[in-house]
Image (cartoon, rainbow, N blue to C red; front, top):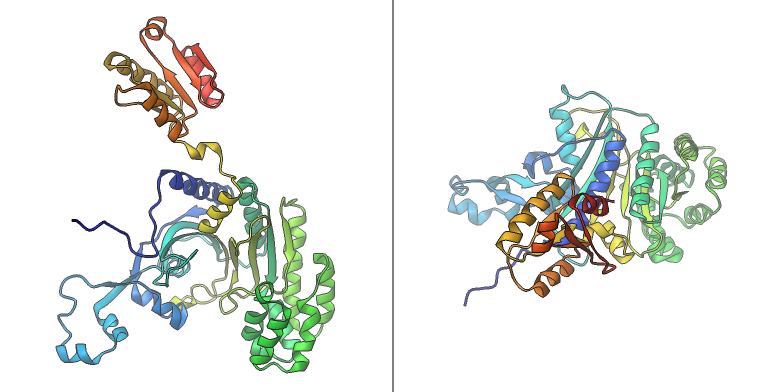
Length: 454
């Protein structure tokens, strides 16, 4: 008996309904990016390992999918070397390419490689899959999509403002209520400075970033465990627990960070973004969250994270300002800011809240019932007229029992069914049935176009 086929762990098949929903997500994000002048690029699925290695830290390097060289990849390695070398050393000999781990490093490579062709500032977006040799588990896959947008070559905070407008617009279109959280790397550096632990900035932020998950007591335990003095932990308490409006938080932090130049600079940047967004009349809440601390080895200015309000799930969008995207490839000093929508988590939120539009549930808008060769030939002409009017239409391919054809329409959630027999052909009409209401009427093809289209 033949073995049942399967797919690699951590990957997924997507059926027709799932793809319709995923395309709804991608198309919505794509449309909003385009509204703000972002232009789409794509980079290859595989990059040279020299491009990828060393960009994600030691753990990240281990999670890169490496591709064996073509042909006799073992040709230049002797049996003795093969037995003596570690798997990592052998991989460096056998593999010159790897699957991309994210879209950021390939984008940095793209900017450096094409810098003479690009007009700065450069606003790009990418919606492509990435691969990580991670341990598969619920919500974590080895292949998944990222939906990134970045502006490089500009230090202006207006870019941060526009990115927050994009986030607000995308989730408003989806009908998902969210809270946009904002903080700044400089504020966090200022906090570490004033409590006398500037060298512990990463440890401090890693700990306070867990506040929602483990609670204040556990956060304090972690802070003490990484070497902060009890006095420093005590100084952090009013900052970690700070509440009130954004303006009230900024006022408190201006006083708390009065002795920190970098901290005050961070407050100034956040204040500018929040003030500029007031004129935009965002439909979703934006909140200054001093415990937000994503990617501090990477981000250098404002940082963002988006939480869904009606579903318990992690961050569904994130991003921030970075000052040296291309420095890893020998082009230092190019500042940028970007965001990334989590398509898989957005999919889960839309599913849980049942927010997908009806049209994502069906393929064709109308199905023509097949009564036989003569009728089918006539229906093909009518279907062509509908398609030219921008309406998706199907003619059932086989002349089988009507019950089976109607079941097909129901299974595919086709909103309208057309019945065209001898009488309809002679009268130049069709019987159009609304599958939701059950209403049926005899009309012309022109009238059917008006009904189905609108």
